Image (cartoon, rainbow, N blue to C red; front, side, top):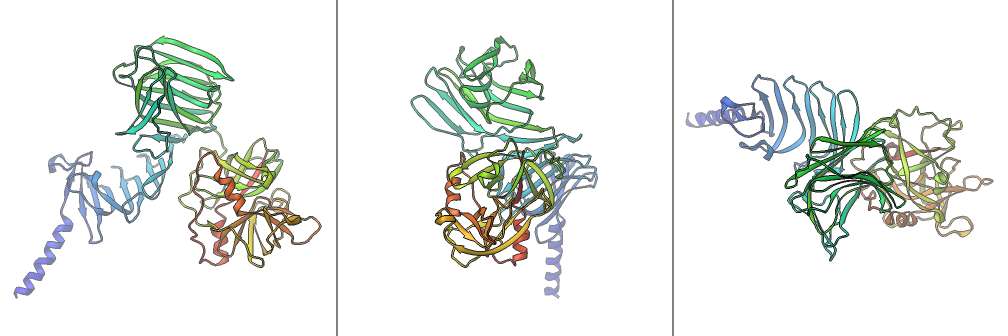
Amino acid sequence: MFKFFSFFLLISLTHVSFAQKVFFDRLGKSCPENQTYYYREKISDDNTYKSYYINGTLYFEGKLIKASTTDENQNTYQGICKWYHKNSKLKSTRTFNDQGLEEGTSVYYFESGKVWKELSYENGKLIENRFREYSEDGQQATIFEENFNGNTNDWDLYHSDKSYAAISSGKLELVSFTNGGTSRFKSIMGDGGSFAIETEIDLKNLKNTDKSGIVYGFKDWQNYNFFYITQSSFYIGFVFEGISVIRAEGMFSPAIQPEKSNTLKIISNGEKNLFSINGELQFSTDRTRNYGSNLGIMVSGKSKITSDKIIYKEFKSDNSFSSGTTSESDVKASGSGIIISKAGYILTNYHVVENANSILIELLIQDQQKVVKAKLIQKDSENDLAILKITDEAFTPFNSMKYSFKENGSVDVGASVFTIGFPFALNGMGKEAKFTDGKVSAKTGYNGALNTFQTSIPVQPGNSGGGVFNEKGELVGVINAKIADADNVSYAVKLNYIKNLIEVLPETIEIPSKNEIQELTLEEKIKQLLNYVVLIKIK
């Protein structure tokens, strides 16, 4: 009888622990029951929890590795977790890995059910510190947000006899030791016509005659735009080919707070640029061009300033991110390419893009054909190689790359190889990617060229720039030529020359290194690789 009672008691206690309620306020802090905004319950022994608003509607459902009883901000989540608005519509869906770090795409929703924000994470870090945001009427913006929580964006921090830059306690600190001043930049601006820039600058250590503010659309010190403030006034203008044009020079502003942080904001709607300080409009000008993609903060004279954020929003105002129906009447040529980084870098032949006025990329995104803009980033005309980058604000970086580069880059005569590309895509054969395979015929190319190898892969115009893969799904080269009067004779640039070009890119990129398709059948390999194969259209 005693044993039976003990067993019954154990079951009862376990049941009670699942049903125990923990009460929280709007901020997720524990609170008395009479002040509750929502409460949480554990519903199973696999760490599944549900939370409910006081009115009984669902607030949260998902797994918690660690469930804090005092502060929900200290929780550690796992798997797919969902939060809800009071009207029962989804508020957000987020995915966490086994370590509790956010992974994949997280989506936030308005109470109407429309998408508000989309953010892509890898191992807990926001990819490129960019995310996509929507208004309820459908306007779309790509946002770069820097909160200076560590140097995740690799700002140029150094200490010299002229200047000092550091990131500490969530702030960027800039100090100039000479009258020449100092500045720091990041290449984060896109090509969109409408944008907004916002930053906060603390002026309490800025001397009366010195300036600090935003430098944007910066190419070099001969070509840039600026919005500066002093402890009492502001300056607006631009420099083009070394000639300075001042729109507002030392205009007094009562909105400036000399002993506090000041919010500077620039809004460009494509026709006008609007400038505000601490939420008060100060000045407007006709829109000026952006000479480069750099955006940064400066301080003049022998002064010190701190900034705790930089936000750049680029508003989508055209249909470049379309379903592939863009008019092709003015397309001059087409070729193939392969995406070689999560950030949207593309490898192709230089001869494919050599005469381009503009470049469009057609690719698969979530099993749908999309068209995005790209630009030439680096070229190697001698080895017929080029690297492009997708610049369209609507492009979302990949979460992962499932194929890999071959580590040593070598090929053996007789080895099986294949390519996926777009031969005669705009001239009868259609825009569906075509698979062709063959063997490595020789380790050298035409007339014994050392930078290429010969294959028996049959290729046609339009295959140029397509990746060449071995049986494991590893990239070993890129198609660049064929002999017109010979059957099944083609040439591919060797991988080592491709790697050399990647090494001299303006920024370091992470090339595919983890081959997740090695054990798949050939059919399944092709299906995965189609996500990275692109059609390049030249205008």
